[in-house]
Image (cartoon, rainbow, N blue to C red):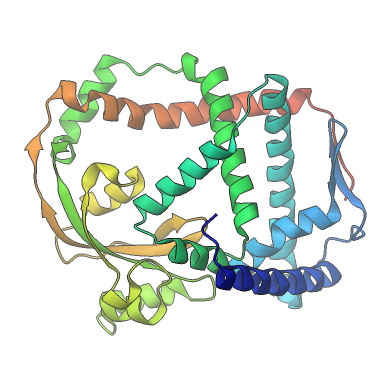
Length: 321
């Protein structure tokens, strides 16, 4: 999807770089499982050492970890163990979804990717560039999206009906956040997405001190949308924004810059509010569906954590490292 001949060449180049790093990572990693060995077995399904390292290597690169540096050995080993735990949990959830005959079609994955591109105002070319920056292929990205949809569907089927948001909770939230519930509210903002090789904290400090403007930083280092325009994404509908971004922007006045936060798949970024066009205030009834979604999310995550722990206890997991 979205691939031209030049994009295929780029993806092939990225795969070569990632494979070269992976082989180096395997040779120098403090985790001593053999390359063709087994890292873990989950209900009879194997996670090979190669698969584990393949999953770990991109995140190590994003964090700027050098497997050749002995001072970073502990950090790499900690990352590898955390990655293995995540892989184990994902397999358990996928197996449970398969047992319950839950599936996700290609068209659903396509639709989710289109929504991601739309929300971020990304062209197909920018989408491919983001994949390269994050050291992943479109095939791997699609599988992550598929797994995410699968787990969310499992969550909805198994624990969603058990989560209740009361009318009192909705009314309290509405009264505390009335200014954020508007019809036709528009916002104009700029964004910086720092690449994994960039010291985001240092850049943020320079912006904060006035040594570097937000727009200069965007043009110099951002891998986000419209970097050469200072990160200005233009006017967007407030309700189309991710709740995390809404929360960050709602704390700013025009001209203010947010602190660092995770904007996408482990990448850090900052936002600058340029203008806010207020709409008509929503009534409690109008705002209720959105508030209910906001309040349900943390409750769902807590129930999902409990559900995942129950599945893990029932699973037969053998870690061989």
